[in-house]
Length: 510
Ligand SMILES: Nc1ncnc2c1ncn2[C@@H]1O[C@H](COP(=O)(O)OP(=O)(O)OP(=O)(O)O)[C@@H](O)[C@H]1O
Ligand SMILES: [Mg+2]
Image (cartoon, rainbow, N blue to C red; front, side):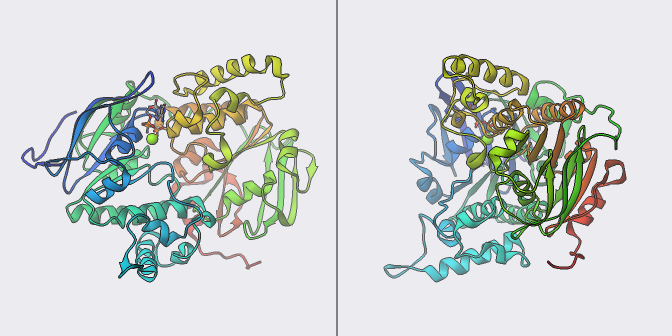
């Protein structure tokens, strides 16, 4: 798989023999990698392969145990992220690293604020961050990311744009690293990000790009490197390789069926477990009507910000209901989250770090949290945790490892395991495969399929249209807070879903 074009070009960034251990885990084993000026270099690999560890080394957030980096021919040994950034290497990390209590503009320039004489130039910060965000968010939605807004008040997708703007605002950038930049972005955001990346490349910068969205990688990257278990296993030119080839290199085997799917016929005689009529939240959603039966997977498509997350939050009792009717498993009207859980409704939040898992606690604690008497609890929890590690292929040194020590995709699997362990009847899943590698996605789709076959009901919010088409029985599209009719998956195409998601709202404003 090795094909090197233009071998004469000296690399802008050289990585030689870089190794990193965490206790018994070898996160990186003697990695060699060259990144050239004017290229987008993709780093691929399964969850836990070592991608983020390598990006943290590049960005000065982690020190390698061994090996050396060179930038522009000179040794590059950043003491911390600030020094790396000053030297020209800026990183958009997988886990958001913003200060939630500061404003958008303050975050974009944190550490290298523009000054006027002895003073911070607050106005320059605001205008320059507004310009960057308009470039990234588009004219129409630039108001979404007001430079004086507190970052904490923004939804995850907008926070991600702020994070990207922060990397683009680095003083004299040479290398920009993106670690899973698009998992909270919709198609229009991704298109604008790619325009920005192409402009960086044209200016002769090097871009390092980590993503599990392999179609996107294909569209943006020039060369690629595959890591497996901390070692480099393949590299080459994107143009002369295939996605299947990448996946085999990542997994060490071919993936057969991405969407395992049992034959399930729509059965109108089955119990309706969730019914919404003209449901509205305080701001979003504005109008949602649907029914969900046992044995069914209902998908909700739509753009980021359309109100899909808010719909799930209203159903689960995290947000108040302003109008309309709701019945969930014989319970009429609103209920608190703990009451929902008691009744048999569970939710996987899109904001894993804040609502999904307790990062400082072990896998066993997170998954097995139960009402067992404390004497038996610990042993039982570890056994339960172990079962889920095997079932979902969670890569972890042990069941006692804190979730914070797991890679991003593996943290997501722990959050899902915790929900699945509750064995609820109605599952509300908000972007369940975010940050999850291709092989693990196939495993998770298999789990969803099995749940439906066992008579559970699943409401699945996803920004990945192929995923919705592959997994759901019916799909409805939400646009500007209004949910369209749910139709069988056979009546939808990718284009039809995108068209409905981006259609101008026809419903009368509430
Ligand atoms: N702070 C840490 N302490 C202990 N182990 C860690 C720590 N950070 C990472 N690891 C381990 O190092 C390995 C590589 O993790 P890394 O985050 O680099 O994976 P990744 O390729 O980015 O995966 P993902 O696709 O899920 O983001 C994993 O086994 C992980 O558990
Ligand atoms: Mg990672």
